[in-house]
Length: 236
Image 1: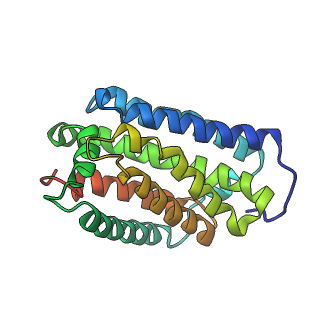
Image 2: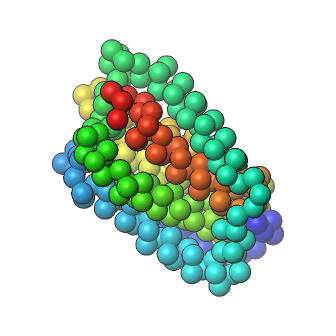
């Protein structure tokens, strides 16, 4: 990724601003209680990212970046698995310390998992869930670890652009603290997850020079916490 400090272009300002605002509004609406377990949740959670990812892909193709981002390399699968495992262990540790079962803060995880839907319904539609998880992972990586990071790198340099991108990704999911909030106060779980994921996936993209490892790590992590080893509740 570029490390030159170039003037900010109108496209960079517009795309990054729209990515943060659109993702923030969509995340707030998706995680509002009235959409708990409904198709509208999935539409809002994934749809806007898909549109942004399409724009990012077209821009990256015109900049001769898309092939570099998505070309697999030897070892990518292993890197993706290790990234997902490491992030899952960190998430398990954080949730069991910050929101243990029986504590007043358990509601943070109850609200989050309740919003996603009935686990029996998810299991019955496992192929569709897998497709959505993969699409969401590809889309978010193209937008945040791809286009946003590259556009920021042209201004602040590639050494720190991935950190700025992680911060903006976290900011975009900050509204969920309010939409998932309860009598116990704001719910920080998804915001903390965005911060951790943004740093891990951004670091992977920076270290390995492509998006395939971070896409795999992102998709595998999401699948694990949704379908295999949920961080709250009975086995799904």
